[in-house]
Length: 429
Image (cartoon, rainbow, N blue to C red; front, top):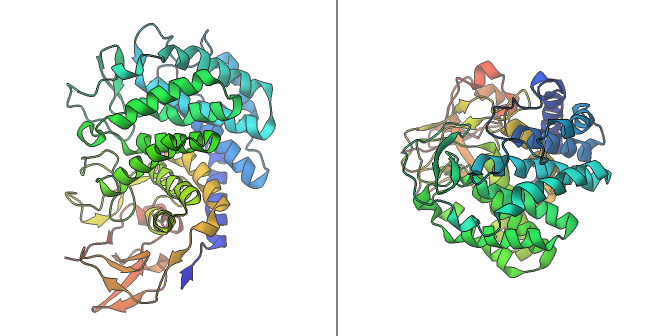
């Protein structure tokens, strides 16, 4: 049997996120631009623009801030046409990462509206921020001297070998995604040369030893897949496959098909941005290779991993880790909402899921079995024991081993005050 995506569910999720981005003052024109001292230069602005365009692609309805921020954007940039400090010999890792999202937002806007403004801004960002890095990528430090771990929002940690580094380790390579999108539009061979340098280096480093952030690694894989789509060069898809295999089999993914924020950090948390990335990478790999395992993983990520990611206000937040070595025994919220990243990224995720929903069906048999990992499942659907406060929001339960178990409860259906105190037992030892 197959369980397809509930069309009403995806439409409700989309509506909740749309209304959140439209009505929350955090995303209106008075607040959408970050303070000048916010060290994630271009990050919020890019994610917001990407979110607004994603919703326009779904409904053809504009969130008003989209046009307003495009109008104001040129006056917010520095003399070289980007956010933050001018490049003067020190490469700012978070600046590269943040501007990848700005490139993505501008590229999506240009592809929908064909406007000269979006094109000119992204071309200037590439020219003045990224292209000067050619020949310098191999100097990225892979040995870190600090023990500073960072929180949900990464922070600058230290300067090594002309790189100002982030606690979101490896986030500089997030820009493989943004640059690949600009290359798709411009076919500028200089961008391809820089991408080839970045991709070769990033594939060569030991991400487990470095404890790299899984989000930026998966995002870079999406950029590689975009390059494969635009060039048919198998090096790119091979790189994306190697990253996704490392993620799924090398300790990057939890037992609930969510992510560890960093490899080797079982004390950390999930991140909806990365869960969305993993679903997109799995689905695109299936489209290119027709290997059923990729499609199955994408479906499991949607039906299980994303169940708790979106909150009842339409935004998205982080959860505890259910994996070997985690101090947490229950799946429960850690941060109710990550307004500065995941709530905006949810918009692109919902657009992508809506576009690809026919791939995301789950295989079910009607029979729940306890696996050797002490997790109950009906093929692609995990079953758990929610606490009493969650049961009114759960799907129909099934009796097994003297318990009534339920699929993971969808957080967007649960009022905030209930959900923030709730927990779900996944592993039965």
